[in-house]
Image (cartoon, rainbow, N blue to C red; front, side, top):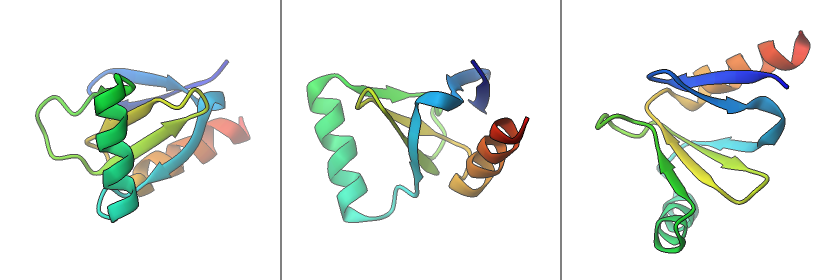
Amino acid sequence: MKFINIGYGSMVSADRIVAVCSPESAPVKRMVTDAKDSGRLIDVTCGKKTKAVIITDSDHVILSALTADTLSEKLVEETEK
């Protein structure tokens, strides 16, 4: 099982990630709101601005302070190992 660092010492299993999205679009904002209401939201931004939203296969939504580009690069590096 491979993990990627999603910021501030938080890690997530690379195998469980379904999508890494920018938080700017309306559908992603609705997804974050729905996840918060149902208790599936995990905020690892440590009070910083949310720059990426990670969707997992368990329908959890993770907010990260790292950009989606940075996270996708890390994900590609981990899957190539």
